[in-house]
Length: 91
Image 1 (cartoon, rainbow, N blue to C red):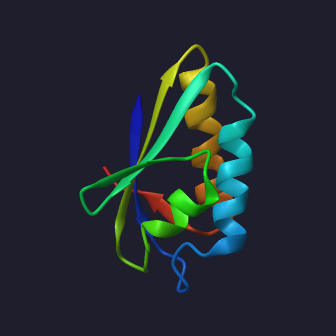
Image 2: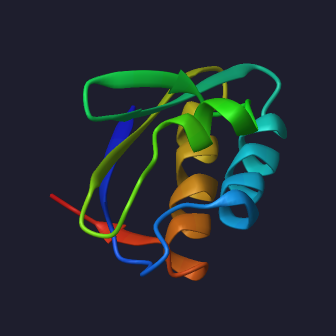
């Protein structure tokens, strides 16, 4: 499953929100979670991976989940993106 977001936070995705995303993804042991942007795909369970994307305002980020709890994981990650003011769903 996947969902795409447009980054709206004026600071992009920096350490604090990236940590929140990583912590959320890590809760789902039976599910792989990835972030994809600018042609690069990284695991969402690594803070360095997420930060290496260098996401800024206006960038597009796709969150991808695969495995046993993919729907729940994607829903939780979407909630973090929206609640933290990081991005909005981009259809």
